[in-house]
Image (tube, rainbow, N blue to C red; front, side):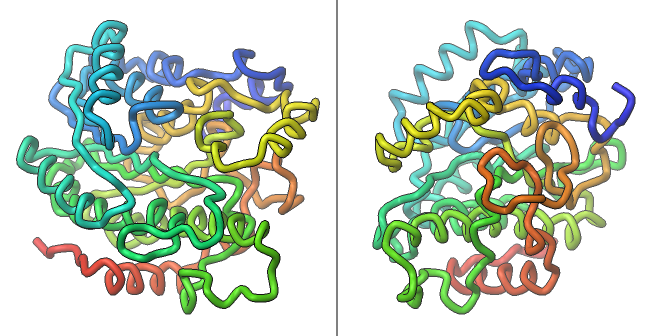
Length: 347
């Protein structure tokens, strides 16, 4: 592992499909010698009841930290908590916070619920998300659903928890925010003047959901960049992550024909990851000592991503030119404050 910011390059060089030599989230914890080393630390993972989120929570719990996951369903959360408790090497708490990301009122209530149980937050992983929802799908607050769930809900939660992230930060252990984005961010920048995408009359209905997804995933990157730039000096760093191609329930809105086409593509199947492999880059961003006191980067394949050569290739891991845009990041933060009614309370 010669390059500290691309430590697993050899393992990603010749992918052979799910379960191949590419690292799992648990390997990241082991390689960083963190089993049982984070006793007293607190982690919150959104969408921790399935797929990448569940495997991220499982890996982070092995550190000994107290781990909270968000979920809409108590029954589903209870099952995951029991599973992690039985399999984890960690001794910390594993608990859940009820949160429906389609409702900003629910998100605000979830932040209050978490803060009532913990005065500390060291790592926030904004993992939950939806993809390619049908045109016209909206949140309970009337926002285009992907922008509302993937970005505005996470903005709301993060803004409400930022004071605690700041107060939990120490010179030797800065707080971190990890934002799950996607290679899909390349589909669209953020339409700051039309976030609900009501003016895309020149596009076909099958394209609009992907523009919405791309916008929301760019927003995830911009949120992380803004936090790192503005709050990094106060001890809170943020990183955005493309987890890789993982077949989870994220693809539930896609047609069977589209999924089958992917499954019949040899190159696609070779880069496909299992959920525990898909959680590796998130986990690396959350725990690696090399990221202490650093952030503001977009990661893929457990490395700092480079500019994309092909913006439309699904197997491409690089980023679009619009991924780093200070003016856009500032504009998105201001827009998000206005749309959610949430501002970070100064300390």
